[in-house]
Amino acid sequence: MTVMDVHEGPDEQEAEARPLTPRGVLRAARESGGLAFSLPPVMFVLVPIVFGWIQAPGARMVLATALLLLYGALFAATTGIALYPRRVRLIWFVLCTVILLALIPVIGVNVLYMVMFQAMTHVILLPWRWAVPSMLAMSLAVMITALSLGQLIPAGFAVMGTVMAWGIGHGIRQQALQEQLEAAQRRNAVLAVAAERERIGRDLHDLVGHSLTSLTISTQLARRLLETDPDAAREQLVHIEATVRQALADVRATASGMQTVRAATEIASARTILSTAGIQAEVPTAVPPLPEDLAELFGYVIREGVTNIVRHSRATSARITVSEETVSVVDDGVGIPAGASRSGLRGLEARIALAGGRLEVVSSETGTALTARMGATA
Image 1: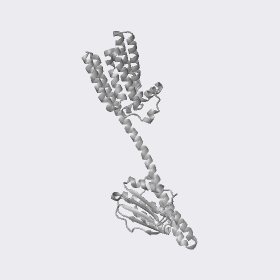
Image 2 (image 1 turned 60 degrees about the vertical axis):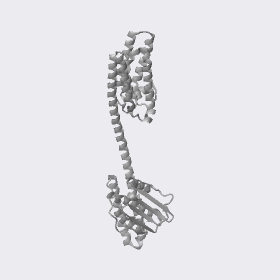
Image 3 (image 1 turned 90 degrees about the vertical axis):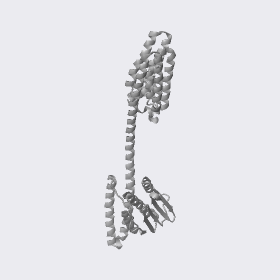
Image 4 (image 1 turned 180 degrees about the horizontal axis):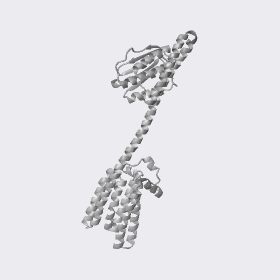
């Protein structure tokens, strides 16, 4: 059976899509695998029918037979109804209960034979926290009533029904937990794939964007120097080749998840890139000791800040500062243009937030300050 989530409720959107028709209920029962469970016990409906016709045949038993057959049909459909929303399940449970109560004045004590069915509807249709106490209370009341009337067989049915319903409910509960665990594992797998795609996207943006910016500057400089200073142009071409090789290695490392970025290496790279772009760079000569994850995070901040300076700022000077909990990249340019893409900053903000920090971006016509704060300063 796969009526496993009846205690917590099925997925409401999926359940709402099921038509509440005989064909829809039958299809749901087949999907749940519960027909094999619910159909055989329905044969026990014949017990009160047979006893009733033997004891008091007549018009009353025609009504009793109709009600009993209706109850049997409702019970047979419970495993299908279990896949519907809670509202439908509760209405179905109430219908079963009302018909059972209506049978009391019609067939008398023979209604006690139906307790086993009603106990099962408790665990199939009701939330688990309601099903157990209500089922036990009903079974206890029926057993006391049956014993007081000297009806030992119905009392035995009450005990048997309670035990069976408890066992079925426990099995359903365990299967529900197993399916919920499997569903959670599937969701986690989807989220892991999405997170990996996002990581690769952020890394490629940082790596390729930074490398292309450096290549653009070096290529422009090499072209200008080609006629006036061939040796300097040749040095730029060597730098371009090295940058391309490094970018290729970085892309491969990103794909394999082995890419590493460090604040110290990014500062050295920033000094070269800013200088090549004709921007006066004020960078630290040493970096304080940083945990590996923080050194990587600060490296990404420096890389994104320098890339934006070269691309958009038209700055004449830039300053990079690094402390144990903060890193900042400041320029005296014209600020981030209104139409500029901020995908790199959004990705950087996500990285920092994931590490428990905060990214501040202050941009105006007199310059831009990019600051990441971690720990107590965040």
